[in-house]
Image (cartoon, rainbow, N blue to C red):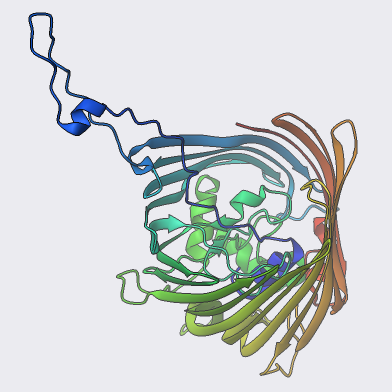
Length: 478
């Protein structure tokens, strides 16, 4: 959920992923040259002479060479939550997923690119009513890139990451997110590529970027009936009963479309009249980088009482975002800082309406770099301050929130590695810890892990405390 639930889910599991490079390496080129033709010479006269063949034109530049790349992965996963007594009808006790992700890229030299990717998801969820199947096909990247020595242009549906921290990442605001399985699903699928036009330019140590999104794409999440839905048992019997009755109006065969229908009552116009706009200015020096950001977009969802008693009005509001990030390499350590100010953001109250406030977000990290992606040690601290504090109680956050995040990944033996991700809240006190063992051989990997969640009253760990789980997954990359 964009804003509160979504922001803390983002904090609870690192969601930063680097933007994919669009330029292809310069291929080798061999060009045959006919010296006589080049001088305008002809064959000597005589009966034995034969005409010199006209050389076939060849591409003089690498820009004329074409290249096609394709790949993806297939993943089969099972997730299990310990059964409660009595069973909660709004919970899933087991989930089985089959996922296929495909990507393709066509490039012509260094001046043209066409990128496409998509995913197929088939899942079977078991709850108090039995099994419920779900299938979806999603188009992800779909853009065209045009490149020159001065400017790069990408137009279409794409992922554009801002910021450089792992957990909170306050500047990563251009793409929508998928919160339906936020902790153990593939990292590549947690951000939703967004329609936009993007222009990049570089001049020495300086770089600039402009991005325009003509339409608004909301985050994807469930309202009720799954373990990471917005309405949980901690919301209280009245809200759970209302949510169950609302979702119960739809047949289980249309469970997923019903969730999307219930997420909002009003969206920004899709007629290209309310676009989002972003700009980034960067500078890089010797082992040092600095970026400045501005984004005019949307905050929300904003939840208020509807015009009819017993109804809610769910909408999105314009907001300004100003931020910066800084990174430096000092010996084997990478130091990073992300900072952002937003003119409006929505925070859930304990009555499930939202409170609007200006907000400051800071995240700083130190990472021990070994040069091996299988060996990672990172510690990150975050700080969030609301300039317009709510006099009552907020869910998940306080007027000033502080916490740390730990990421450790290390190989053990014979292709086995261990990983720990643990965002821990200091104010409010709560935490999420995900431990995982991964055995990898070639393109195949098997993972086995678990998730523990706990926290003080009205914190994220308190609200989702019933979601301790075990999971396993088999994956192959191709």
